[in-house]
Length: 301
Ligand code: ADP
Ligand code: MG
Image (cartoon, rainbow, N blue to C red; front, side):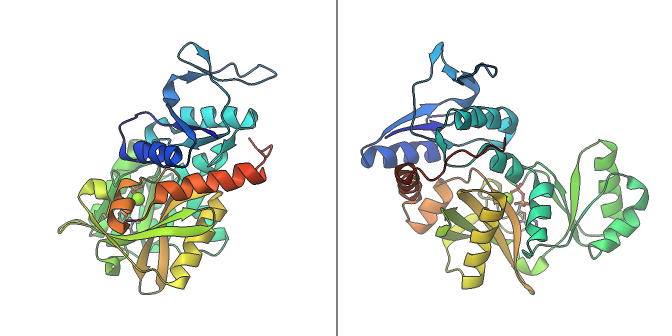
């Protein structure tokens, strides 16, 4: 098969591992810089151009779309879907996952456990908003943040009020969320591929920090997950519509709660912590899907 990896950089661990795993399974794997793709969106037979020429025909595409290029990346993936190329994650699912509010609303509708979360536009009723999510300490989060940037822990109502007012004043969309203290700076990353958790790690924040992101200095170890956590991670990925997803769960007094569902989860942390070959799981998923020709693009762009 010919597999394209949509990624901004060849030298990223995840990109390299996907190329390695595809090559080891006798596929051709090319890294295509998402931002250097361009397209005629009005052509009856959609194509993509790359570096001055029409992009060759691929059997499958692995989108690795960073948060900063979601809009353009999703457009490129959508164009590939219209060309009937099998995409590991669909463009609609990628955009859905990038919007924390939209994702949480969908998950909540399906009865998935979440920290109590509020969303508001006007700063007029902040007092009630704070009370609604259970009062301080609480978490304030940018709607489209990533790698822990834009996630703030506020300890008092006074601090919460000023931070919320400041963000709303700057026209930044934020979520106000119950702080799960008992998680003690840890969360569980479940790596879901094709309806199965292929690897799971516990990420522990460094001391004096509540965010467990590896980019914030968190450290990762392999973890045994419970059946409930496994089922929850698989359901969450399914609800968002992702075939490949990194589902983050915190362990609370009232059971596991979902923090977020990532559409382009990194491979480095999870492979190094667990010793599992996650890249090959993704390639095998592509083999199964392309062979069965099951995942015909649906007309829901
Ligand atoms: P990002 O998209 O920036 O990774 P997250 O929502 O995943 O943002 O939050 C980053 C980290 O902060 C999580 O991995 C978790 O460790 C911690 N965190 C986020 N929300 C909560 C919460 N409600 N209670 C406790 N810890 C949280
Ligand atoms: Mg996160």
